[in-house]
Image (tube, rainbow, N blue to C red):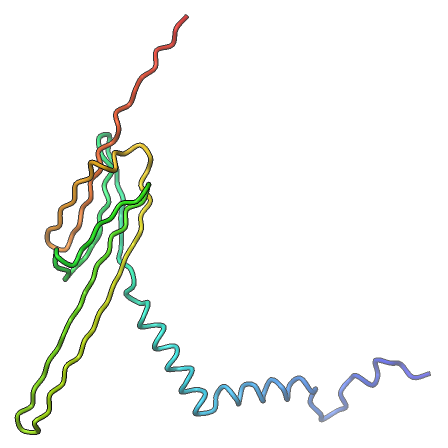
Length: 157
């Protein structure tokens, strides 16, 4: 009697059918037009989100909670700080217009670029969010929150 599985084993010198399919898929994605399209998509998404955020550190002492952001090359006017519930959102808007004129070829070009980065940071419930103070100097943004005063509860007999 013939075994069912004996027909499924490849004969010597032949490749299994799935190898041909995998090679077809590899050749499709490595062909010139598709490969170029995939590279462009990688470049677009890699560049679009590479600088979408900025580093943030938090520290605290007995009296205050501090958020520190390193924003090198950013002007104070480009920074926005908003508070909502127990979150602080720091946004940086960078807009640039470049105009060039070439008198020799009588060409004029104008290009616009805009980049917005933002970061939302949760703030603990034991700080006074309404009393925050922010200062920006030498590329360093510091946001300080005073802590709420502690109340000691006396235990009665």
